[in-house]
Length: 217
Image (cartoon, rainbow, N blue to C red; front, side):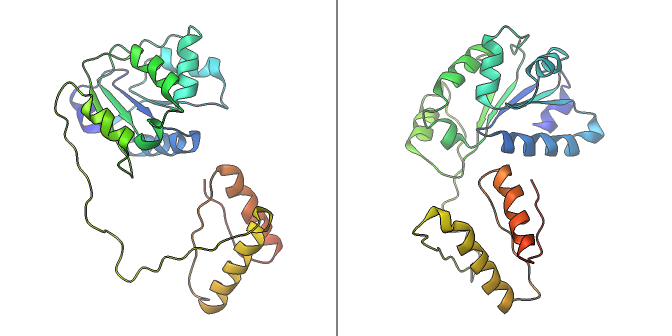
């Protein structure tokens, strides 16, 4: 996307849609870093931020817009200056989730605003029936790449812990951390959480229990 933009550095070149604000923030941050040498202007359109300021950012004509469907469609229907007729690339991340049905109304509003003649890219970790149907609906035969082989790291161990009560989740997790650290004192752990709130709260709990931890979100 950035390579194509460098060839034709126009405003409102690409629109990137993601299902969550956390993922949108990550993509926004990465584009700012990677595109800094080329002075790429990117704006973030997500819930939780000032909608008037976001409308002003779009009106200034950034090169790339990163957005969640709900907030962007709401702004489009609220009369903000969301002229996307020059969009050349539409990128849908987590396409399996975006096409699951919960975003249908918002996507319909957005699709009406972008031009028919564009490049559309779908990225997904899983190949779902909804994604397959979307690919077949294209007017032209699309390029499709799928990872067919088992790409698991050799020697990787995968385990799960069945927790009978959600209230006990934190206690089970602390027990797992303690067991791991007692056997692997010179190694680190990476723990993924479902959202920013949990990512912030859990390390605070672990520090109270004398566990060394830091949050990154």
